[in-house]
Length: 130
Image (tube, rainbow, N blue to C red; front, side, top):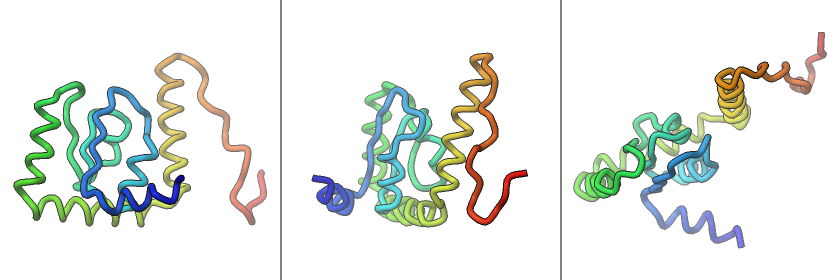
């Protein structure tokens, strides 16, 4: 079942994610690794946009249509964003992704007034805990 997912990404050129809330959807990371331009709303996915897509306002159908239309009318922009998505994904090891998730959790805990997460329990191989 999952074998078709990578194929579907390869056939696409744009990931459109009009989410109203999501910390960091894996679909964005997968789409970036597949070289898709990203159109997303001001959610956690917006943090991943670095000249590889567009961030639009939440719940705004006109903005969604405008972003897609812009790509349809500007092939150079689309190709640049697609290439940049792939480059960003290649430069982002899973340890960076995990750190990004931790920063989201720590920020949420800080805003809620709860104590921050404890230091990591696991250390990278070859390093002893002090």
